[in-house]
Image (cartoon, rainbow, N blue to C red):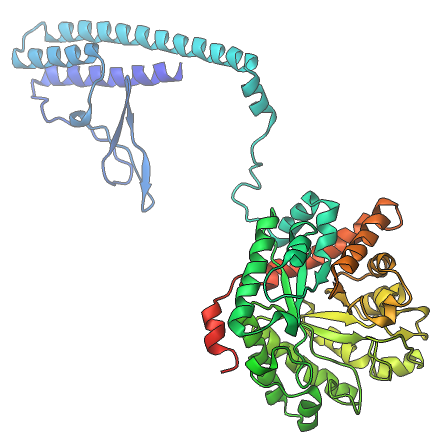
Amino acid sequence: MTKIKRQLGFTIIYAFVILFTAWSTHQLDQSTLVTQQKVGDPSIVKGKDQFVPNLFLEGGENIVHYDSKKVNPTVNEDVEFISSIKQQQEEPSQNTVSRTNELAENSLHEKTTEMEAKEQNDNTLSEINKETALDDPKTEDTQEKDPIPEETEGKEVTLEEKINSIVGEMTLKEKIGQMMVVGFSSKQPDDHIKKMIEEYHIGGVIYYDRNMETPEQVALLSNSLQGLAQASSEWQIPLMLSVDQEGGRIVRMKGHVTPIPSQQELGTRGDIQEIYATAKRTGTELALMGINVNYAPNLDLSKTDTRSFGENPENAYLFGSQVVNGMTDSGITSTLKHFPGNGRSAVDPHQDTSSVEADKLDLENSDIYPFKKMIENVNHNRFFVMVTHIKYPAYDKDKPASISSIIIQDLLRKQLGYTGIVVTDDLEMGAVNKYYSYQDLGYEAVKAGADLLLVCHTLENQVQVYNGILNAIESGKLSQSVIDDAVKRILRHKFSSIQNIYVDPSAAKQMVGK
């Protein structure tokens, strides 16, 4: 009825115009009735069976224009009506007013009848559509699935929402795979590493000299491995491609990279700018080859070890922080090692276990101090913390640090407040593999709070560590929430820190070591 009332209003306006012009005998060829409210550009929208003025805002001004020259009737009755009026204008007589009234009444009656019929027809079609929709199973399914809520339409998904969504959809096996960083033997993707990426969905790879021949070859290898991971992941989760590039005697592909002084040399000179510049240059070369994680700096305190900045805890913190800054500025994530500090041990953990016989106060004022200061003053997203296989009886009399919840959860997480990623040292080292099975090591490390487990050499051992975690969850020894928390930290790092998944091998060839 609203449409009918609107149409009646316009018809009455036309009738009034006709009566007025007939009475005054003026010509209506160019007549225009204009109602203005704050003048703007005239415009009119022509709709079927009605004339609707276009109301719009332009510079804050509202315009309403009724222009008779722009009216374009769409029904025959309107055309005949206008034609008859013009004929009356050309031959005015005493019957003009009565004839006009008669035409107006006839037109009004016809248009009213037409509008009522149209509205009744529309209502009938609406009822038919409703009934059809109820009978149509496809429509019913569509109605049951609500559209995106208004409050989320157009809203950008946050990183946390993305991570929670992915973790919620991942299988248990995919989650466990993300927690493992593995090594392999060749300079191209072989069956070993393909299996670990495609079937076990491992989260990272560690390079050794056995994998690295030239900067260009390493870049090609990195691209190939990332390609395998992307193809194997529904969510395109990148790999952590990592290396030990400390300097001194711990340098991979030494003949093809810019020389890197040992930490002992840098610590002796004590030049903070040199330490930063060395780290940034090293990080830049690693990034050119597709590597995104470096297991350095070494914060162990030692007077004799060339891998150490020295015995001074404050210097170890200051110099170590410059390494992290340089690596960060070149796109590389650093790793502080070997928590809680194994500089006092004379036994190489690659070979066997050992214990640091010192009380908590002594350790926290010396060995642990550089880690504590880094955790207090540096963004935790910039570095991982690698936990050693050495024992610290002052904290845990039974277990080495890498599988000790007292050291990882109570000391590192709770007491020191570290929120980033915890990575074990290589689980194939003698300090642990002589005393624990690989299945037990996998379970124990995750239970203790480790996020990433390094298994650097053998396919069989890697599978055993993986199965140890899987079996522990399936048997109820380990909660899946522990896995979920670790995987969320890993994905948070990957999606926020790994900027370039693929690299240019020609750039690596031209720039690394030059």
